[in-house]
Length: 347
Ligand SMILES: Cc1cc2nc3c(=O)[nH]c(=O)nc-3n(C[C@H](O)[C@H](O)[C@H](O)COP(=O)(O)OP(=O)(O)OC[C@H]3O[C@@H](n4cnc5c(N)ncnc54)[C@H](O)[C@@H]3O)c2cc1C
Image (cartoon, rainbow, N blue to C red; front, side, top):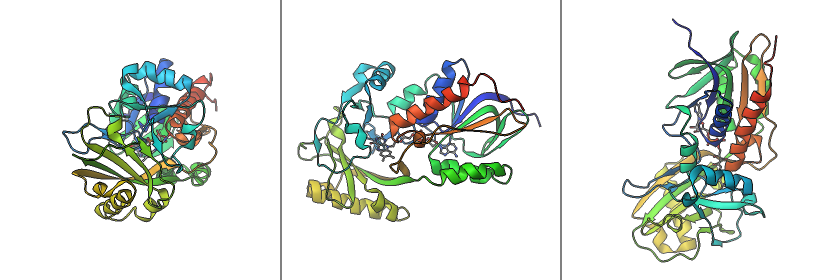
């Protein structure tokens, strides 16, 4: 059997951290290869329609947020016409997913075609293979070997840009061949990503709503309700995204989704009005890993092994303060760290 071609730079995970990492590598002249187990790029930065005739709604993060420099970069990337200051009308004083999104100096924007437009544009000039699941990694005399469900890939540098639990899974699968991964695995196990059960509900008719997003302070079930139609001018009727609180979600992760979706709609109806209980169309999505638990970010993790020129780096929101802009920054920083090293380690 022929040995696989050795890629300079492979990134596993085409979420924001993986895309930012691959783009930064591409800007230095490399031709990174991105792989993702899903059929689309973006990971948790996701939008989808509740039914084919409706436009896509955001069912992960509901808006982009970042500082002035990050907004300038985003505007250059997706175009000014794509961005809408949002949310303008915030109801409730419950804790948002990323409280820093509302701090001074932070800008908040909805994307008119859905938040997934951001990762889609980021991926445009990159080589991306979707539908490829990474299983395990090991070092060899030429670099790093990556076993996927579609065969083996080889790289000089390999970056895992996944949720920490997903990186743990790859490390666990690799331990028999690479026992030295045990210490990094122990470190990653200190961190967890909170789940989020989410319902997208569409109503052909419904009253005018006086808010764009509602963070209820008293509900034990509902973390937030987003009024999607307020950022999709071409979406008729009322469209709500209801995100459940992490503890409530955790307790129902293995429960049939039609049961928890009904309960979540009922809880939202108690807040907004009875009509919310009976959507004309709805979808339920189970995010097992939604957002990281609050905590400090880690420094970029780059692992090497004596006798091999290969490097394995780990990135993602864990390596910054958490959230989408944070995942993006961590990805950029990881590529910079790998590529600024002028000499590869000599053994
Ligand atoms: C419901 C919800 C609400 C959120 N709200 C906010 C918010 O308000 N503000 C905010 O800043 N952030 C929010 N977040 C968090 C934000 O979406 C994430 O921080 C960010 O998108 C993480 O990006 P990432 O690239 O690190 O990971 P991901 O987006 O998870 O990307 C990882 C990618 O790796 C792929 N993958 C996983 N395992 C494998 C494997 N073995 N092989 C190949 N591919 C694999 C996945 O398919 C995925 O595409 C929210 C997330 C959710 C789900």
